[in-house]
Image (cartoon, rainbow, N blue to C red; front, side):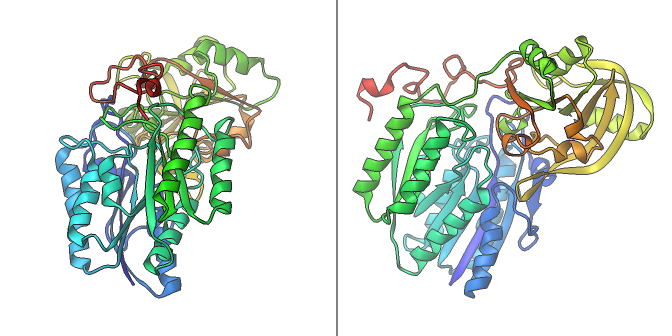
Length: 489
């Protein structure tokens, strides 16, 4: 067998002011053929798992480019076309192949392309023809378009949010690919559009039980090769945005259709109950201070760089400063200019510094003060499961007794190593402020005495009923109360 693999991934918040060019990929991951490290990133696990599969089975695996940029706004058209054509040229050189196995995200939007993944997959299908296997993994915060389904044999999405299972789902992707290539199964995809957009953390009910139910069905029904919930991405203003259920069966399309519909309607019936309750910054700090033990983690859920925002909002930090809190650490505030100034001043220096809240309205105001520079780290990284996530040149500063991490590469807070790599013992602080919606939960829950979800400011369009969409479908909840009651099925 001769297989081709490549990775092209990012998540596009079409409301974000931060546009992406090739430098964003180079800052996060840009690996030419054969240069991808042994450790996978979130969307590149199909490549690293594929190396092992090919080695064990004596297959030929031809690696293309692997490119991942941290979520942000619209991708520069030339950047997308250059990366796309780079991968297509590599595939052309590799032909003939028995299969193409890709790592994608699924919420990419580029200037001139509302569905870049669909564009890439359709071009690959045209190149290899109808009889060559084409499959890919997806992040559930994606858009499952008709073009993508039409161009692939099957797709597999992460089940967990936080996405702690990205390697496991790459294993599923390759398992089904092997069985297909060896003639033991014939994948068929069934999709049900739930006509809704919501947030589905699997660290709490009711989504925890729903995902466990999917695992149980996969384990007990030999006809079911894979089940996925495409959560959708509410900050992606595209025509096919929304939550969908994907069932991959062994050539049982009618059964897949029924199962996808049943699961999809079950999700729809629970709409609006999945997300953890949120509080404002004043309530969050008050509750954290009242706790007898620490650390209390306050998640700044809507200034989440993992959702494409800048990660430079200062509203929670301002509340801590105004309340005279000292036993706290904040990670991170994105400000490359402030980091550069700190790097020039050096560790141990005390300097006047203005930082934060430069990207957009609704993020608070820049913070001014004399700060002590505690630690400087070039090319800092934190852990996320089996992967390492860069957050760039970073500075640990102290202002009025609060430890603050300034970073130059936007990244949400995944793991307590975010703090420890900057010289802060996270377990020793009363309050930890991080910018993340839920990916932090798997790691931080192990050290937190409590976790508070805080909605501070408006850096992210988090209410679909009020968001100024221009391209997204009108007939989904909560934009309408009951889309299925309108005869949509």
